[in-house]
Image 1 (cartoon, rainbow, N blue to C red):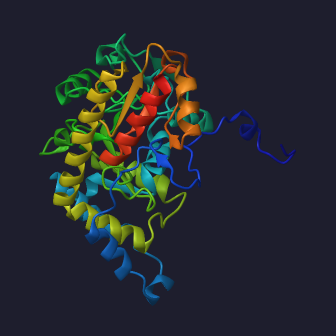
Image 2: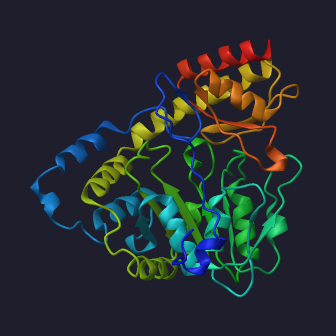
Length: 355
């Protein structure tokens, strides 16, 4: 602590990211990274940018990348905003759209960066409890608010809701912004982006994506939001008051190539989804209870073994998963879906622990 800190710094409880240990022969299943590498086209595009042109500033508007995102999703380029990972995009959203007179709403079990942003920016918020099966009930959000945000599928539960429920909520929530965080949407969830197409784009819907998960570019830091042009304009004003060059040349080139390689995305996501279903079944055979998941991770528990104890015993054997202190999910482990080989090692170690 320093006497030179601004008063707000003392009140902050920063977000704690998933551990990135440097252990050898580690089975790392704790941060929802893709078990497969990026598109080879993305890697080639990055390599092609390593020239003397790196002495120049990048395109501050990321116009080629925005155009590719717009084309992929059937939108206009003025409906696209990009930033350094979806975390930065979300940070700009909270500042640009959520500093309202009424509190914003998000689930009581969700992405733990949301309350961090609220405290950083002085935004009042209210958490809405998930249902008894850890589901998001959109009817609970249909009361006056300063904004709504939740992931679909939700994290860390992995549960998703169909697009029709979001469309219904949007129709009943006309006086504040609805933000759908679709970090894991490519693993089997209906995206809300189609609601933004056509001549009548909802003025209060924003959908956020990241290239860190399904497109395997976590090390590149690229995310984007799509929505009504007026919402995007507000985000651009905040971005250009913070950092007018958010994405470097390498990031723009790699992201552009990854966005254009949809076939690679579909192949790798199909592999992850297949492994996910196989893992859920195998865990069930060991006595685990797993929530339905539409993400590249699962939330699971064993009725005869405490979550924290399992977490520690797995760690001692070189397998890292995620454990949360939230009372409602403290008996659960969140396990990233890895390769089939990693899943088999996880299952073998779990069987040893339980026996």
